[in-house]
Image (cartoon, rainbow, N blue to C red; front, side, top):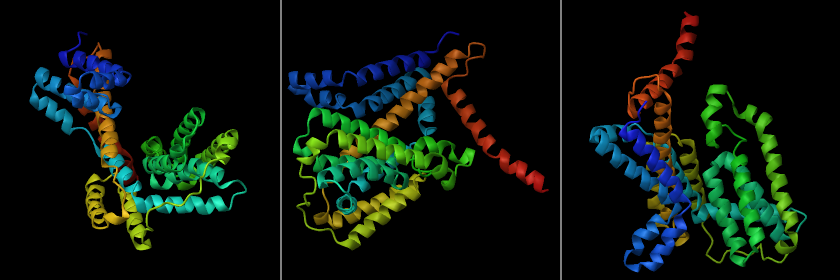
Length: 355
């Protein structure tokens, strides 16, 4: 089968996007070499922008090759809930009241541990916070742990070996620390309903194993670098004024609401707007909200989902040489309709059995 113009363009653009991801530093060098156009080069040097930028080019190519209606239909058929949720949860979880509560919890637990305060704080940041990801979602846990490690350890000039080891353990522990519950980790969430993985099943089959692995990983890197960690002031108190307990409770309610309605963007975006109003009204108890960082991550996820999904459908169409070419949107729409029809089968079967 001869590939269509949209298929060929989609495959080429996806390959360019992957290449661009590994060439981000090249654009940063261009920004210094050509200060007159530094803005656009800095933009293209942001790794989070890459897939979003090339997804935009892909949509423009679809509009040119297949018509504007086809491009709009494809865009409107996509689900952007996950990128929006990641953006919102990052901003809320990184607010000062939430960070202060997490820090106070870590410090309280550290005082109960039989090791120096700096080692205990480091160990808990790599173990307790990732395990909290099972309840506050993995993006929130990653945000909290990363900010705590930045302020308490990275700011004190860690060695390169400890920096890389910390990042590696943090990524692994956050990835597996969200499997204590059936709703926090996206891979688990995708299959939990279909396979009837409830909370008890997750805890008894995956949760305790994941928790054990998280603790072992964190303890291992803590003991490996205990000599360097002992010399750090890991128990310093924050310099800013205390946050009122009532404001912490309000922020926790916002965080809980966003997590509970994680799959309903109309709800959690409304909560986020209220959160922004509260944060502005009590700005003296807030640090700078990480709106830019959250938007970049959300933009990356949205762009990756659009470009990656388009490339996957392109590959599937190209591989089915024995079928007439129905185009990118026909295949994607048929697959989605099939899933929607399949979702009703158990309910209809149950109703028939009842009758």
